[in-house]
Length: 296
Image (cartoon, rainbow, N blue to C red; front, side):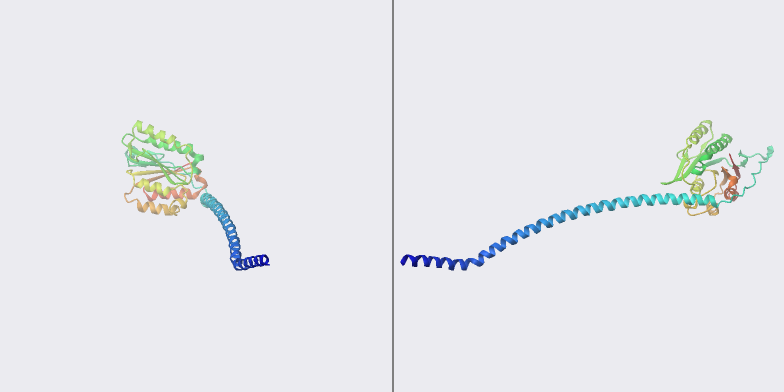
């Protein structure tokens, strides 16, 4: 009986202790379960952040590519718009053929002047030959070269001269000078040969449009007393400060405070476009110069 009482007392004590410790055991089990859940949630959050960073990087790449494509499309649109404006300017020209230029009259010895070229005459001795290289003149590049060369042939030792070629490219207006420093040089045989080499190097450079206003303003700023413009006479307002032919004439005539002569030589199919003749002839008359038109 004593042994039975001993075991019963021990069992009772165990049961009582188990009942007392049961809540703490349950808390430990629950805490372990919570930690496992938190670890899983943290791992899932890290994976989600990695995915989000990758998606953001891919979105940034797509946006950069789209911006690059947009810039290229805008550049193409700008070039197409300029081409359309050039075409519209040509279509707007009147197709009525103008009367042929009057032949130059023969001069008597007492009427002879300092310089005579292409039927034009002047008393000036310092010249700047301004050569238009827009793409519409490319079919007439040979005629342009021959005409300017004939003008060079007319120069004498007491003359000074320089060349300024120009056109409008995607980067902006381009001016090519001979001599390169923009000064005038005397018409020695050596200098004339150098000018002809420069002229020959212009072949294949007929591109873009025609910023005539900028070329004439550069001529007015030079040391020349007479400017000779060789052009087809079809300026695009987009490259001339928004000015059409009459606007260019008004601006140049107003800025020609020193009274420099401006001679105009039309190159190409001038008989197709009456506005070409009107622009070049009016420009010359408004600035004390002569006018000549040459076709192939």
